[in-house]
Amino acid sequence: MMRFAIRGVAAALVTFCALPALGQLNSDTVPTARTVPLREAVEAQLETSRWHFGPLRVHPELKLDNLGYNDNVFGVSDDAEKVDDYSATIGLGIRSIAPLGSNTYLRVDAIPEYTWYKELDERRDFGYEVGGAVLALFNRMSIEGGARSTDTVTYVSSEDATPIPERIDKVYGKIEIEAVRRLHLFAGYETQTVEYEPQESDINFGLLNRDETAARAGIRYEFRPRFSILAMFEETDAEFPDDPVFSENQGDALLAGFTYERETLYVNAVAGNRTIEYEGLGGAATFDDVTGSLFASWNFARRSELEVTVSQTPRYSYAVGNPYFLESREGVRLVVPMGRRFVAFGGVRAGKNEYPLPVLIDGELLERTDDVTGWEAGIGIRVLESAVFRFSTRLEDFDSNIAGFDRKYVSTGFNLSINGVFDR
Image (tube, rainbow, N blue to C red):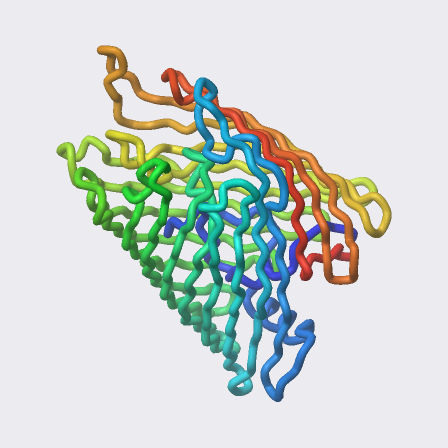
């Protein structure tokens, strides 16, 4: 299948739980790519690792991200002066795995990185990704436990486009048991600390520094190897030591989802009701709404691929008087191979950022809503058997009902992944 993919994404996922986006511990955001079961990911890592040191299998990883131009580095509103610059993030390290027995494995990753700016030298920063995990994969049970620490320059959320250093230290554990044929029970627990290191000129991202935990349990039933449904209950807790008003919240969610995979069609969806109770303002900021997401991929004529994404989930906010906003997005993306080495892609998306609590603007209480539209277009080139070079241009336009929050930014950049492949 001539499909453009990034090797290693699937290896970081397990069958019953999607990784959350933007560093939040929730399970209602599915990955926007096909995934594979954990066992298959381990087998693939063992087979494709380039270097062998006794039982240790090591694969080098080189990444070159965000090499390009951004016309609005700080994501300021349209009526403010914009700052543009060229930037790049480069990382070079290893991902490794070693069998500890017939069914047990040790994973270790270590990837230092450096973020460079041409003019904004005060924003240059060293970072890293390090982590380790122990996996026990038995016939009817799998167990995974580990720790991971990342320190990288990233965007906090769609609320603001300013890239700032973010450090996340996480510890987690997961277990899945095939109780009876095709019926699986699973549970997991994770805790993490999130810290931002903004410059003095930046917005107070420190309000989003937090300690949070998530515990989840559920069932998954496989009708056939590539078609399953699940139901899950999740509890979350977060403390914000630097927020004097909304310093803590507790939440729970009841979610259901399914995964369907064939050679030409893949669908992954999860949805349900999520409740989050915030301390402060007499409970006025309590969230109680439907959340969820969907990713669908259809391979059609000449191996082209059409991708559809839909999502709605709460995101933490630094806005005065609002601890969160409800982010909803719908998007479509087309990927078209052109020969064996080239692939063109492009897409559009739209949605809203909705803030629950009204704020006083010119003597009037208003609930802020930012309408979002955007597009992306680019091309990928396989320069080596395991290296993919990508060029893309992206635009996002935010139209707010409150003056001063309209903003737009365009970024043009290059990415290189030494593990990128064109699947055949």
